[in-house]
Amino acid sequence: MSDERTFAMIDLAGFTALTEAHGDEHAADAAELFASLARDSLSNGDELVKCIGDAVLLASSTPDAGLALVSRIHQECRGVESFLTTRTGLHHGSAIQRGDDYFGAAVNLTARLAAHAAGGQVLATGLVAEAARKSGVGVIELGTADFKNVEEPVEIYELAIAPGLVETIDPVCRMRINHSAAAGYLRRDSAVYWFCSLDCARKFLANAGAGI
Image (tube, rainbow, N blue to C red; front, side):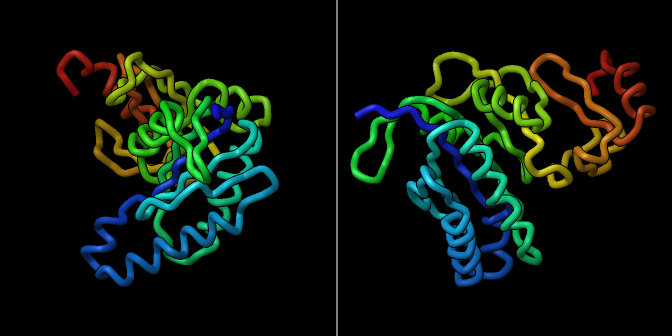
């Protein structure tokens, strides 16, 4: 049976490094805690479909419900001292339900989005981004991206569900900044560049032909 659902895949950024630094038991504890936080965040109509290592796959009835669920999970994670940041993909589409699991292109694309996200970043496709705009969540158009086993380029959007958590590198001064504190961003071809200052943005534009 095919069902329309908003799927969210959330995994822990830096989980491999955590495992190497602190060992398998510590990493397993973090994954179990994360799954518990996700389970405690469920509301009516939400499902924790499955846990896959350090990731959870969730399904909600509508984009609004999916956005609310992801927001609650982020809040729960923020409440845990020194907890790993998350990477999130959100997509609304049809999938085949078999038992307690879902299969199909919508689930695969959701997983690709999560893998594409940076630590702290929430990436979404069009229907979810539209719902986010209507609910007052900040939305940044990131252009199209190509994903493995997805035939057509996909329009993706960054959602400000977890402001202050997404970090990137200024391409000019190489300083690490988070998106909430950035002076601004520029889109060039299929890439988005964030800057710590307007001076760095001007230098980037002045030297764009030099391959910065």
